[in-house]
Image (cartoon, rainbow, N blue to C red; front, side):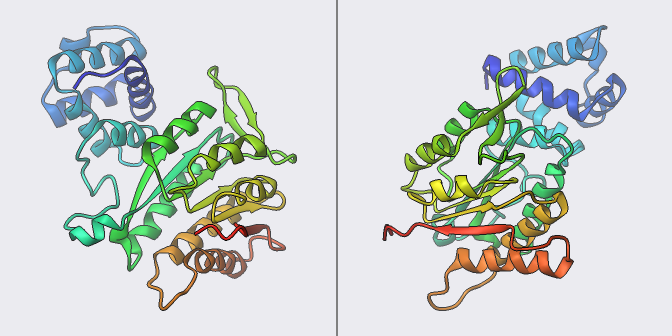
Length: 301
């Protein structure tokens, strides 16, 4: 496969993040691919060596092997996981959880795709939140019906493209929110980029045909949830600041509830929301009902 310039850049950043010194990268390459990093990339800074490594792998046709073994060696790295999901056609299901193998055709047709978007951590435990989401789906009775996609360090255009490309049923945003309801994304320079509730509502209106639920796990995001709920069946936001631990507990409970077996005409997303609220209450990590659920009241199916 041939990588685009943007893909080479993302892979370089991911490898540097996962292997922050030359020695660790050298060991991974020797142990997993029986290749000599020095022979491939020579001497230089870590950035130069990783750049040359990617060039060689791309031109010689083993870039997929490089991505796969890098992820196997550092499975908890979110940047590697994100680029691997984009580049690998058949990622190892043990390293890239859900969907699990051996799905029946009926189950495959009913897959619910969850798109997780993260931006500007600044001390937030976004890695832990994503891990808890994955663990909740792994434990779920209906785990074969869910698939997770992850995009990190998102800019406005990244969110727009990711939703269009992935066509998810559930969109989960974790990051920072401002008191006016704006979500903080990044610009091309990695700086804070507020995006207004109105702008996000316009975006989700374009994708109302398949997006069923939007969860904004960010402070002061209720206003955005209200705007989004005018076209999306379910939108969850926060009516004030929410502590990092409380946000994680709510996410754990929500996805636990989403994965439970239901009976009759039970409202799945209401059930998942209620489970998230119970998770916060049981852990006693927050005062008041900070997460709020907004439903589309227009009667749209």
